[in-house]
Image (tube, rainbow, N blue to C red; front, side, top):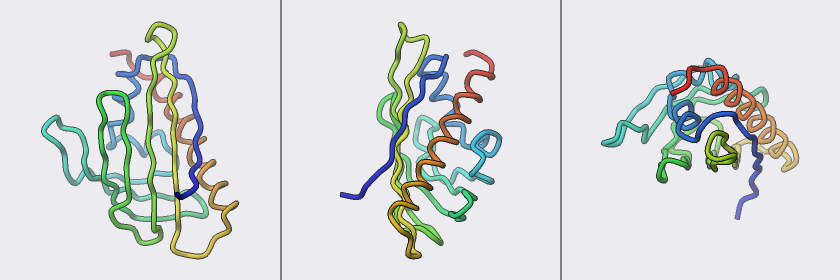
Length: 149
């Protein structure tokens, strides 16, 4: 099994509000930092993205790739790499758990990155950690500063 990196953060919003931001791929460049461009290629019958093209610039990792998304209820989304110029794997998930009576949400982000070029495991883990920490901080800021549903 591939090694992965994960981290959690608590956001002052309901799980539905958090998932609303996570599922709004068009706005990722506004808050993620690393994602510079997005394009939803395919949606399910509920309007949720099934395949998304993302242009990523995360310092050591720059790529134009397509991810396939799987939605599990209203509290988890996971993704796997479909195609990439630079990566062999980019698998991850956001899992949401209500806390404090549902008015706050614990978000756990898990990520596995495997690049095609040789890279030490500790450097890959560091890149994953940077991506996760920036994404969680950006998500928290975006959700907490946005309009309440």
